[in-house]
Image (cartoon, rainbow, N blue to C red; front, side, top):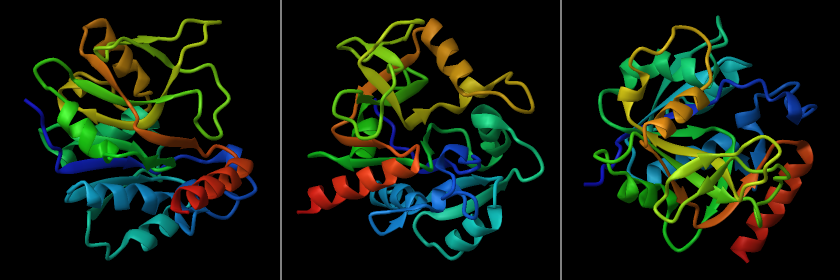
Length: 240
């Protein structure tokens, strides 16, 4: 049985240090690509997927993000304010859990950027998420052919979606695209304060409750100012 999430968490609290000087005066989610801020690319895709509510966390230059999303109707935005404490990718979600409810939810990095293939990837994730078999479903981009990514990958993936984390000195074909569906149950017993979400990915993997879905389309890793230009170019090409 698949689940269609009605809520989403968007991580927008990062410092964006690798994007300097673009992020000296603006938070990374507000950096424009193809004519609109990274954050709007994510929120527009959530709206298209029928998500009614999104929680956006803020820390660095938070007022710019808060001002930008104020009045947005679809999805409705709730701010999770982390300006007083750095909570990391895991701690940020724990703080926002009361706003997210008990059902599985979409989880996206505000700076993730992709062009959908034949079917929207958020709809594909929702159709593939089976709460009987998994607690976490990650959208996985092939490292070959992705724009702006030069790393060694994050996971190897079996045909059934089972993921195995990359070992040291190993090169694997898939990178986590910054888009997932998470069951709130994985946060039971999580520490207060700062911790990384990857700890919960690893635990779900050990329990056989972690799966991946190959992205259909083109993923862009917008980590540096140079990558912004490459992403702009890819969007122009896709619209041609």
